[in-house]
Length: 359
Image (cartoon, rainbow, N blue to C red; front, side, top):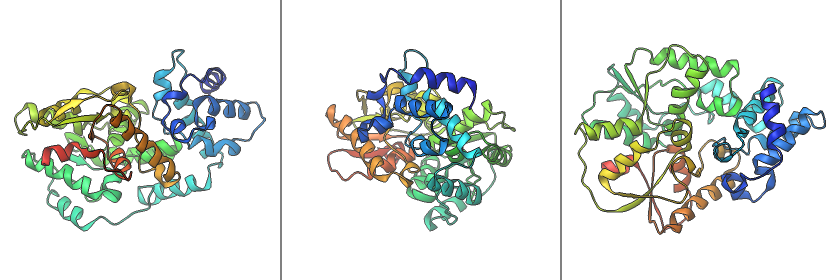
């Protein structure tokens, strides 16, 4: 591990003041799922008391959502040292078996789910936009393989606005799943490089999935992946279509709350475009934790190894909405939309931005 990570680990393992903001820790009620406990375990690894394999499971009980880092008044970064430790585990061959299986699937098929076939309706919608244009809609692996209806909605919204755009049937993996699972190893950078090469001819890349947007706009630049991808988030692109009058909106007067994806709010510091879109169709109220203080609502990748916890994480966020008497949550994240919709309840409706626009 880097000396910087070791410094953060040795400093982070004392105060425990970020425990209230950790979505996994709140869902499980276990101290092991807090940043402090993770730092304690890694400090023992660094001192030779434990082997890294003994704490590897705990590394993957972290969403890397950055709530603890944002909350830390002393400036320590648990996300940084968790990712560093995951990279170490990958390079030493000490990944948990269930993570190694997902990594292998990413390398073999481009997605952790090992999927190779597209939904028939999505395949048809993609075929309608096979012609090469200046703009490509990048759907991402979650929408393409697990939530095809959401991928189709993204396509339909751009069609409604009269945008000329391309969708790739053989869309390359952005590297976002490998980035989460094993970090900046050579295989991750190579996958990112192949994606950047495939997208270099497009003037604009619209990232429909916030996870892809984050790696395109941050990790590609930080890791020196070339050629650079000229990416815009789907939220920002839709807000601009409204400003240009290419999308027309009818204000319903319905009150909703917005679930900020941490990838937008914290990693990319984007909070307003989604609210501008929502505000054109409804009245956007706020939950207690919103914007950069957002609480994560779950995703599809972690659902592969801790589905019960993902249900509890999403249920907690629905309870946050109920706490401000909201009856509708609007999301801008495919993964959070899937997680929230998986909760068996009938008090809060879950909508995507595309649902608002297409209704």
